[in-house]
Length: 473
Ligand code: 5AD
Ligand code: SF4
Image (cartoon, rainbow, N blue to C red; front, top):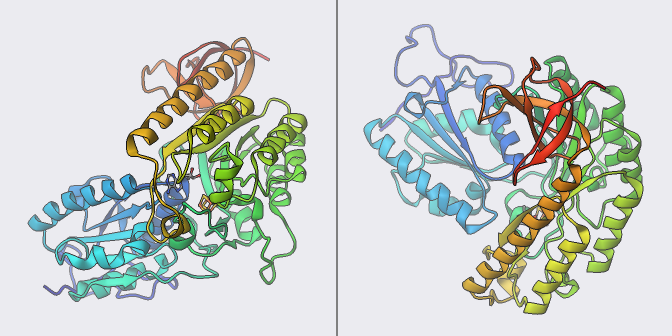
């Protein structure tokens, strides 16, 4: 089958096949509607917003109804095997839709596109285009190529691409908080992690375009911005021409001072790179949120070395102590991997004791999943049996729920400032939002609206949320 793809609009950024006058808009080969599904991290959510922006520039609008779509894109994650399995399942569903609607284009974008290009294109009828995280600008021309009946593919990684000039089209519903990517890629090569292979080398986006994007969000009424990168603390470490000499704490503080009515968060920090300078910048700016996500991965120095994390247990705990010393009332969260190669009961016990010592407010916890091509897959043996990984993970989750409850209990009786995000799912008479420490707070509506800052006195808590009442202050 061959179809000519036309775009309804042609801008200077998208010199593609624009719609000629002689063709009617309702001809079926005009791409009008994009349906996009996003898996994985916040970075992917932001990438999807960039993709929507690129498509919008070409007159293709977003739809949330898959049956209306002329093109389906799935933005994928490769971090663990089950993330990939989920996407294969979805592709099967899309294949069934495509069987009934032959002109429908299906594209796989993101990390799986990078990692599994050949496999994705093996089945003729499954996928029309495969695009890696650094090639989204090529989407319109690749769609046209796919229209000629060829499979279209671009998985080239770039050393420069940051999509700095593209304003993401926000697809979230709340219009209160937004993500802004400040860098892409990762140079750390943790032994278990596929990210440096799927997202390429680390590069920083220029500060001017970041601050401009924050300014636009401010004008649109957004109240909270999360600065995103795989390792935000190494922002600008590799000097790019014309970028000045801002480091991450300079950038964060500049944003906080320029937009005092907005709140700022960031993610993710690497324990090896988080500096006292940054901690002081957080401490002295009330609109930089008091929450640091500092993934430990393991509490055993031996495992950390095998993971190539670049710090020991003691060094990690020293950073935790520095956070507690410099920032009053700072929440700390973590990522933990259970059952990494060669992990013994003693190593696992050390992870549990590190969690106790760090007294995390919340955590993301995973079973180790071997990823082909990583150092761990090449050089180490994935020798912890599945049942043992599961047992250890359950112990980790159980401990964390105790720690999370302890942290929420300590909040009871406090008055916290909450940025309202929306109406609670459970009751239309209640609102929800988050406090500076990133804890979800639910409270009676009392006429407040999303985007308002409300002082809430915490009266009780459930496993997931703090519950309180608004107070005058
Ligand atoms: N197996 C399990 N968890 C992993 N992560 C990254 N790679 C793997 C893997 N192969 C986890 C780490 C990281 C988070 C984003 O995902 O904890 O911080
Ligand atoms: Fe993966 Fe480590 Fe880079 Fe995080 S810092 S993306 S875990 S390689």
